View 1 (cartoon, one colour):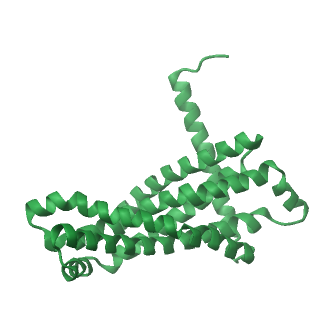
View 2 (view 1 turned 90 degrees about the vertical axis):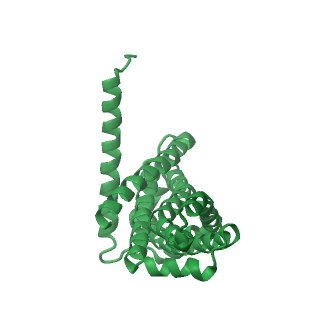
View 3 (view 1 turned 30 degrees about the horizontal axis):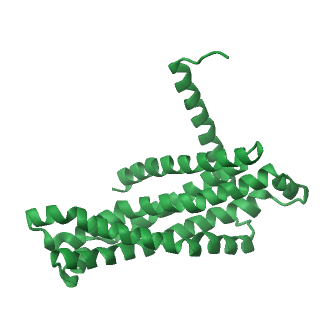
Length: 258
């Protein structure tokens, strides 16, 4: 077996990344075509909302609480040094709502829901259940992919709203304990300095991230092959690809939306 040169390795990685990106883009187009007009299984959508949204509340709440605590602890030195106690609410709220909250919640969501979706669809693919649906004249995308796509977007947006709220509440409580920042001071600076545009950007990012996780997890799940090892590779690839795509989209969305 010939040993590849570094240039060949880089080229191979680039080709593989381009192929996967193109496949995911084609899947996204196919999903959007089935949404206008809507053509998907509604019972499957309700099931997905329960599995992906409601059952992810606990992990999002735990993550959000820790995020709020860490924000205040990390900002303690700067607040004390520059006398910015009155701006603690604005600083914690801006970082949480605009950047840290949507990204961290999306990564947690990807690790739980995205990995589960890839494993579920990958198992169906390697056991020929997808082909069985086609034999029954059932469109696999309308029955399996589109409901999950819609459910992940709705779930992550709702979870981001909940997570941001819990993170800010925990930050306000820790700020009062560590820095003697009163609640009215914390929340007053938060609502005075933040604008509706900041909340809109947070929810827009959550929707983008939800769509990314859905497309990546479904794409790699439907491409699984080779039995159980192939399903494991699909799960690993979907989580890694989702994380990379989240950071890339976060950069461009921050650049465009300001």
